[in-house]
Length: 499
Image 1 (cartoon, helix red, strand yellow):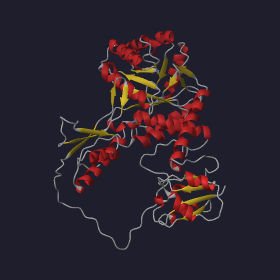
Image 2: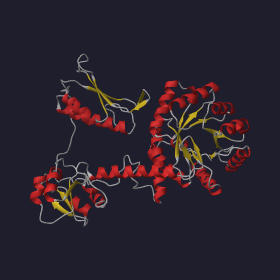
Image 3: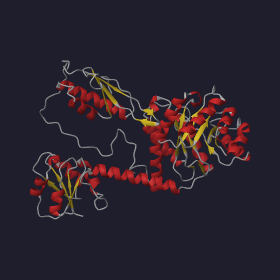
Image 4: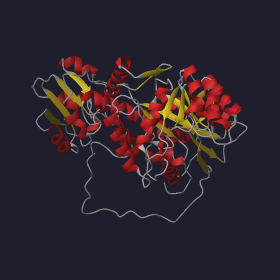
């Protein structure tokens, strides 16, 4: 396939470096490639015949008339020159777009293909057990179990909101954590509320036999945790209701007792069990616990494995997205089957969604026999796969310097805040950026503007005539962008503070 890439003078070097010998390059007599027009392109074309012409991805012009005239496909390339080599490698196997830049189209297509493949793999997976419609074990995807701490003592609305939030975040199983002071009634109420909100499997987390039995009576699907100290008190109900237990060792570092407890459960007639060798936090035996998982899998190839990711993420001051991804990768190598996490601390917010993405990535990686990269799905938030070109500082330039001068805008000032996600009428609504202007008339229009990105809010402020000074507009742009980033990364925001 013969390909032509169209660009402007400023981007020429970057384009040639990215394209290399994969396509011809046409440099138009303009500085900025995004200003490419059909007329300019038509005048600049030579007699060479091409199968495909890539115009800059940032151009907003319609090339359909020129395409018809030439009989050549004219499609949007990527937004940035650095992505051209990657995009061109798909020419011939992908129909590019006249509306969507090639980089975005590839991202959408690869992600869609990846999601479809995971759905297909899960559909044909052979599992060790099924609870509800969820497969556990075998070659099925690792399932995410999200714990709601102290479920038995929460107000109904609080519990319902947390349940909806976890389901929307991608949890496969909801775990109801019970504190020591929880009553039987509290356990049963929590289970009943959970059943009324979602049909995904529900588990309960306690060592107390009385509470475990109450949960089983209420129709729980999975119980954690069972060991030699409580199994005699709960075995009959577990068998009668076919409830799946998570078996733990009597002491976290005693792998042999885990095997003994598993054998004890089987001797009691319990057929479907999940084993938990207990993942310890960093500084408290993390490497030793990982070794136990390794030894467990060497001795037992088939029993579904429970992997308590939250034990690590909750007890390390590091961004969870990286910790969750690497722990999911380790879990995959052990053929672990349940990734367990609460979002108990603020720094662990988003862990359920992150683990759902990680489990999907690991399933794709295993299917392809590759490392978890270039899958169409990723967990990159700050880092980038292909770095854009840096600018070059000229010999002469004006050194930027701030000003201490401050003038009140006659049109008024703004208070910027973020709202948290909230559940209304059984649906989860994401948080928003909210601005209040002290000059807006509450008797004519609402004095609040809310949106999910800085541009929409600033455009609305300008349209409403609520700003009159350039320095105020620049300030608002800075602060609203900080608020947008805080919203994206699930951080709190305080106006005028450093982000």
